[in-house]
Length: 193
Image 1 (cartoon, rainbow, N blue to C red):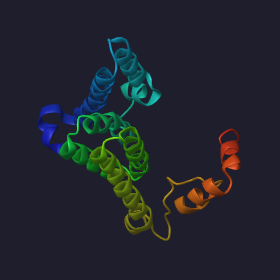
Image 2: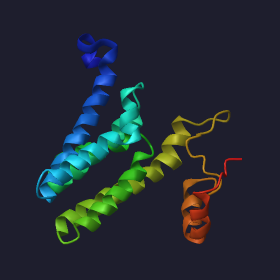
Image 3: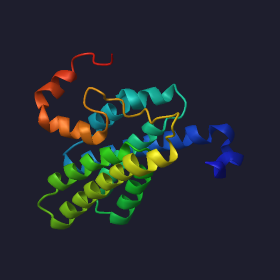
């Protein structure tokens, strides 16, 4: 962002956030427009995109990397749909390094894309490749990068606070399969204490 500092000053990051949000909206429109007849569904999709709380709250808050990263998900879906593989993987790589939890998002986005494009062998493979790379990157982040760079004897990583599911992502995943009904119940009860 420092490259734009002489032009935009302290507004540089907020301008970048707005550009990311707008790109996500444009790609949402284009993706739905290619798949539907008429203008109604693309316009409804864009309205839904911009009225989601995370995007809407971007209008009144400081820069939030999660909002910027989430805004790129429609971009990668649109790039995938247009088979722009180099750009698709470049934006996916940007998403992966933006936040540690985006790799978990991309795991499921990759699986979704592989399922959606299951008739096209190359697209299915690309979706599965994204899911596989995302899974390994998530494991690498949780088991190597975060303990190495963000944790110490005095400080623990606090973004994984799902004690009701387990003490680690692997325990949480095992619990999801071990007792799925209890996991559904946890969606509706306060288990924070």
